[in-house]
Length: 308
Length: 295
Figure 1 (cartoon, chains in turn yellow, green):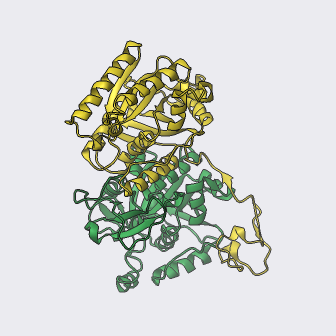
Figure 2: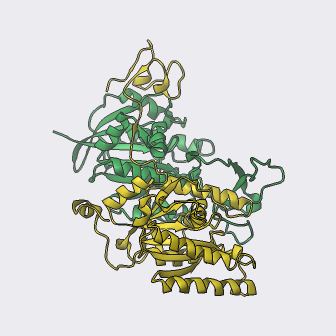
Figure 3: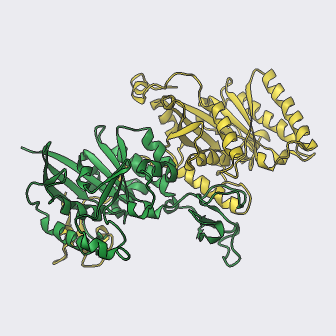
C-alpha cells in the first residue's frame, strides 16, 4: 500500500503515463512505493545439494547420480531426455512437471549450440558444482504413476580426479549417497580405438567401485551403464564388437561383486529421429521406478516425517 | 449483497490483456450475453477510452509506464450478481514474475485473491525450441524449428560459431526465416512452451487450491484452420499441454479473437461490426459471447 508519485501533474497512478517518461514507472525517482519486488518460489535453475535434500525430505523422489569421465555426454543425456517432451510425438512417458526448467533449458541451449557445429557438447559442468535437474514424468498409459526424478550431476573432471587419487571421496556432497541409481556414462565412439577400448570400460568400472568403497554411493546402488553417442557407431564394425566384448567383461566383474548392473545404449542428437526417441524412452523405462504402486501424495510424506 | 469474484488477467506484454478488457467492456452492455453490467464502475472513464480505441480499430495498448489499474465492474447473470475485480496487470510486471520469480506485493496480492486467473498467450508469436540435431537435412519435417548450417553471409559470433534457428513452420527450410541466437544463454531465449509452463507453475504456487485457471490462446483469428484449441496446444505447445493434462479440473483452455481480425487488411469489416468482432472458441464451436470467460 501507499504508492505515490511526488511529481506534480503526473497521472501515472491513475492510468496515465509517467511524466518523466520512465517505461518502468517504479524506477522513476519521483515514485514512492512499496518494496518493488518480492521473491516468489524457486528460480527454476538447477538444484543445489541442500535444495535436493529438502525435496527428498518433502516427497518421494528418485535420485539418480550421473557418473563418468568428462565429455562422455552425461549432461547432454539429461538435456536430450528433457527435449523429448518439447515435441508432440506420443511417447511411452509424459511430462508432468519440473522444478528446474530454466536449468534444463540452459543446458539444452549449449547442446543446441554445439550441434550447430555438428558436435554434441553440452555446457561443461563446473568442477566445483554438484547440482540436480528435476523431471516429474509418468507412463503415458497411467498418469497416476508419476515419478519425481532428480539427475544429480557433477563434472567429469571430478570423477577423473577420484580415479587418479587426486580427489577425496569426502569432497563429494553426502547427497550422492542418497542416490538409488547411478548412470555411469561411457562415450561409445571414443572407445573404438585400440588405445581406448580396454582402458575406458575398465576406468568406468574402477570409478564406480571406488565411489562405492569411499561411500560416495550407497553400497547397494543400482548401476546403469549407458553407452552414449550411438548415432556415430557402426554396430557391425570389428572395433565395436571388440569394445562390446570388453565392456561385457567389465559388467560381469561388477556383477560378480554383487552390483546390480544394467546396460543401455543411447544417442543424444537428431532429437526428432525415432532412434533417439526410442533409446531415450527405453532408458527411462529402466530408471523410472516400476513399483506398480502410486506415489503417496506429497502431503502424506510430509506428515510422516519425509522420505529418506 | 454481492459476492466478489476476482478475475486476474495476466500474460506477457502484448498478449492481448487490454484488448480483451476493452472488448469485454462493450459486450457487458449487451443484454443477450451471459453476463451484463449491473451499474457503473468507478473506472468507467478509463474503460470507455479503452473501448473507444477498440471500436475505432486503434491498437489498445497498455503503456508500460502506467500503474496497475484495478477495474471493478458490477455484473449480473441468470445465476446472480457479482462484482468483477479485474486487475489489469502490466505485462512487464508479469514477465518479472514469470522469468525471474520476482513480483510486486500488489501483483502477488491480486493473484492470491483471485478465484479465477486468465493466462493469456498469443499464438502468432510463438518462439519454438531449437532441437538438438546433428545436421539439417531433408528428413526434418516442416513443422519444427531446427538448426541449419550457418549461411555464408552470417558472421561468427564466437569461437564456436552461431546458433542458427530456422523457423520453418509450414515452409521449406530454404525459404524459412533465419535468426541468430547469441551464444550466451538468458531467460529471454526460453521457448514459449517452456516459458508458459514456468508462468503456469508460478501462478499455481501463488493461488489458492480452489482457484480456477484458464489458458487463453489469443489472436485465434490468425490461425486459419478449424482446429480446436486443445489440438492446437497439443501440437504447438506440447509441454504446456502435458502440464495442463496433469491438472485437469484446475486448468482449462479456450481460444479467443478479441480484436476480430487484422487492423490493416480487415479494417473496414471490423469498423462496420464493432459489436460482432470478438469470438471465443471452446471445443470446436465459436461463440460471440466473450463474457463466457467469466462463468
